[in-house]
Length: 261
Image (cartoon, rainbow, N blue to C red; front, side, top):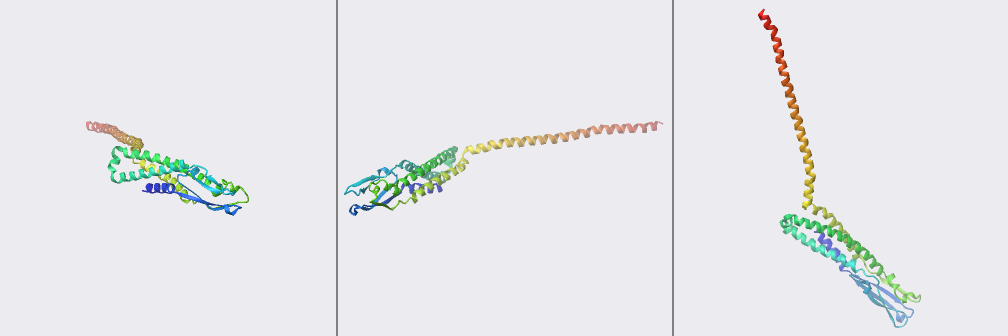
């Protein structure tokens, strides 16, 4: 089932993410330098709780720095939607395969399936959009150039601050793509689920009844015209009959007069 796989990919690529960046601070006094400062962060991206220490290049003191931002709400909402969509898709697949009769009984199964499909389509759209915005905030907050601006040592021209490597966001980008693919998949499935409900069959009957009435009235009108034509022809023939008989009587009158003569 495509929905099961797409939901797995969505929450796995987001919920299982962990990344980091590495910075380098080269002080004018080389003994105070730190050329390997690792900053690690992971799901659910409460970046304001991520702290690390950097040299101040002013003696042995070190500065405690924390990242900026909190994208946990959008990330957790996205993963929650993906997990519940996975569980529902798995349960629905089992029902379709093993409990088909129960599913169609009293039309309750298709109606529930239709409503849940509409709800999940909406949740996928909202969750994917929110997480796309949250991911853009994460990218800005973990950009090494932005993080270097938080360090007091990097504000002094005599010190050299560089980014050793940036975080890899490919799996997070993939999670957003799978989020919108799930929305398209669930929204496209609404029509197929709707066809299983009684609403679709009742609407089909509603559309077909006026057409049947129109065709039946047309047939009756044609029948009446045919019967009218046949009856009128019969009446014309009947009216012709007596006139010919009268004509026969009139022609026989001179013959009898001759016989009398």
